[in-house]
Image (tube, rainbow, N blue to C red):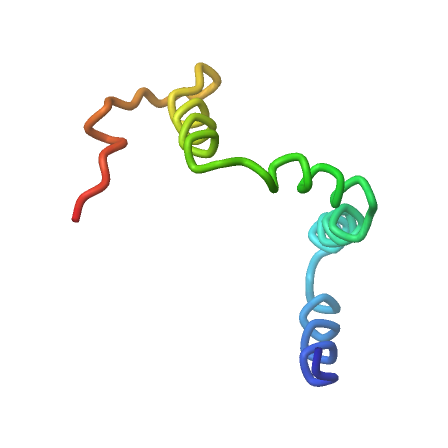
Amino acid sequence: MKINTRETLHQQIDNLPDDVVEKIAQFTSLITSNSYDKNISEYSDWQKKEWQEFCLSQFFSDDDDIEYSLEDAQEIY
């Protein structure tokens, strides 16, 4: 990473409210921890079918307040 990128990031963080800086710190902790690597590796060997099933399950999740139809999920070319 270039020094310029680090400096720019430091300047941007210095201008953010404390609650946003806390979220950035939590995110940084997550992505640099060993548990992140373990969670990611769980999905690294998934095949296309498994990803499709996962996406559809998330798309049609009951936790969503918005209802979708099959037409909403179709890709347009």
